[in-house]
Amino acid sequence: MAGMFDTLIKAFRQPELKKKILYTLLILGLYELGGLVPVPGINGAAFTSLVQNWGQIGAMMDIISGGGLYHCTMFAMGVTPYINASIIIQLLTVVIPYLENLAKEGESGRKKMAKINRFTAIGLAFLQACLFCYSARSTMITTIPKWLSATLIIISFTAGTCFVVWLGERINDKGIGNGVSLIIFAGIVTRLPQMVQNVYMKSAEVSGKVPNLALGILLGIVVFLAITAIAIAIIVFCVYVQNAERRISVQYSKKTVGRKLYGGQSSYIPIKINQSGVMPVIFAMSILSLPSMIVTMFFQHSTNVVVNWFRNFNTSPWYYILYFLFVIGFTFFYSAIQFNPVEISNSIQKNGGFIPGIRAGKPTTDYIAKTSNRLSWADGLFLSTICLVPTLLSLFAGLENMWFAGTSVLILTGVANDLVTQIEGQLATRNLKGFLD
Image 1 (cartoon, rainbow, N blue to C red):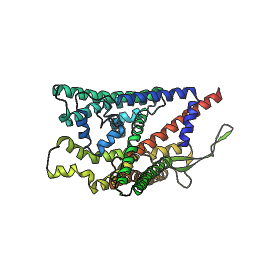
Image 2: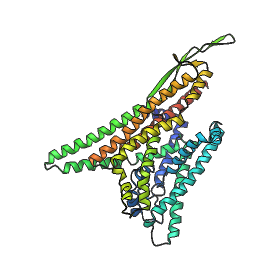
Image 3: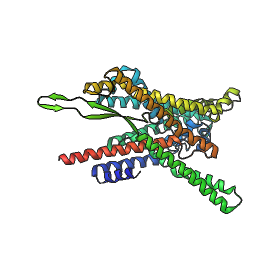
Image 4: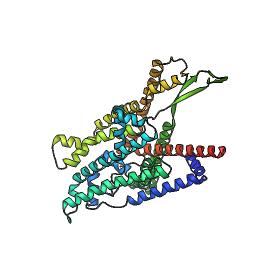
């Protein structure tokens, strides 16, 4: 944390970086103001009551939207459609040669991929807005025709997502970068006071149950400090694991070019333990919460046994068992599509390098793949622990939406780490330019 503040102070001493940071803060301020605009044609209180029954998928969408979903604002869907579009395009890149070639074309290919991602996000936003409108049809206001209310709701939700994505792109172009992630980060940070208040109210509730006033106050303070200590421990653990990496030593052979001798130095290949980020958690939560969300949307008044089972599935022990297994499985899946041992092995061999004790070619590829798989086990267990422990603690403590819930902490620490790394890189570039000038 101290290193983050030191980096920001150094950045403010650079005029160009200072302008970028202030511009980024201005855009985030516009995002927060826009999140206060209600959606026309719908009863906000009734909509809030409805979406709170969507389970963990609804809670996750509310976290990503910075509280916009539960408050039925223009930014209720936030950047969720954009994230889903990014995931879909990323997965299709592996199986569609055209997208795979675009990803390898450098800057021009990146711009085309961004355009495809943008249009896909708009399509998903419109589809999701239609689903929201249909599921919330009972909350539409009755003073205007229903078709007009539906049109207003769908246009408002879709336009809100498009505007949020546009704000994120402005941060990428003229701000500090990492725009969409910073918007999610800002939405979570603005909710921290409310989450701390929830912890305080829970402590006061525990304190009020004790007849002795002094003992009750002492117990309340202990509960508050215990929850805070657990939260800090989880945050520190997240930062430690997200920065941890496994370094594979690489030795480069000496070669003569003209009269000079090159090579012979030692290097390493860094492989992060948390290669997949928060994506396996989002995948697992989305799939497991989908049945109960569908039941809530389309079978609200059904008393069928199967429907009731899916409606209460989020509270079943099987939910947490499957959650653990899905996080592990998606960690391996996401790591497999993100990390390519063959390319790394070929790059080492092309540059005249080798891993000490490992023959070049397929043995090197197998060694790198085996190391990556071992780290995937550690990554999956880390993500499962971070997400399940706070959830189970909140169930036992009777505290809903703990502010240090796993997904929020993973996003906060991950974005903060990326932001510091990005600023440090820009600082290093500017210092190097100044030295050369």
